[in-house]
Length: 415
Image 1 (spheres, one colour):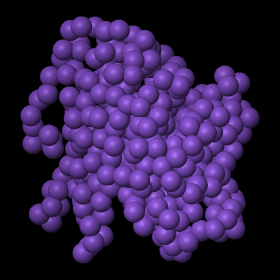
Image 2 (cartoon, rainbow, N blue to C red):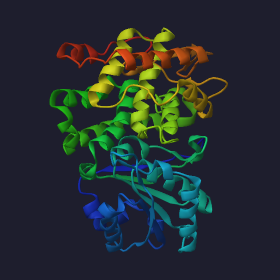
Image 3 (tube, rainbow, N blue to C red):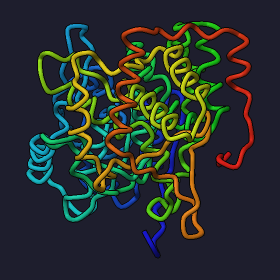
Image 4 (cartoon, rainbow, N blue to C red):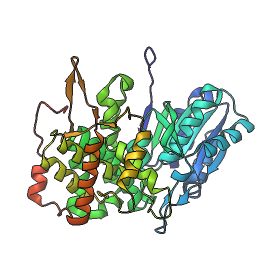
């Protein structure tokens, strides 16, 4: 905000949750120490970490009231997600409990969970008394690699994802990599997709750091806490610069949204009916990034190698690359009309090559947002579906990986 500095402290520390009795008063704003503070978690996270965190906060001398929101199994696989409950109804119910249980202007809202709980708490903290202190204790790759490291807070609307929200910073974000050991491989990959987004848009080195170990050692790396901690720290370091002067920088707006224009639409539709398999957020964004690369190729902004690299890297990591067969292309195009960057046409960031977004000069300024004609969007979606139906991308060879991670300097790159 012009004239006001927004500052967030990020702590990445193994064992942080086990040491809250020592750490809590250091990361919670001092003004909150004598107030009633509100821990919001969900039905999946609470049995794992709820008592540990509440006891730690109370042993530090803090007063804490716990609120538990629902999280459901996403599909027959048993994978859990709070996404169906990231709604105004759940948000308002939390507000009711907070207001009825001793809130004051000095209270802090503390989120314990992944991206959904982080977002819910961000909106809640921004609304009550026009703003309470906010702390995230994030327990998932989605939260650690992306969702919690942001000023954007939102809940869903029946017409689209993240349509109601605000910009509101947490004072502190706590990341304990030991929490990631409790996640399924699918949920680990959910957040890795967002880390990969920043790699594909900003840093080919981050792409290599993520994909290289998975190429060499396979899915076993998804259980390696040291590997996940490295991805976490590098994702934070790569993303944080995009939060500086967030509103005034086109690049800083387009990079975090890479793959999201299509991805949000695909994700929201996938939760809309029993004929679809619900997609986790990162899975939908992975698909959206592949379609974005197809769009860039059609516009002449990147070469075919960039498109192939997108499919190969994302699939090698273990994420989906194709629009599901149950989702119609017209439905995606219509749902994209509710995207925040839609102004008569979808506007999105597009790749020039791995690690770099394409740009153009306009009125002496660089612009990284591209307005996409409907015919181009349709052609890109058709190209993605055609690949799904006829061509499965081959596994990466050692030779292609060397080529893939060779950074080429160019005028189109911000590297």
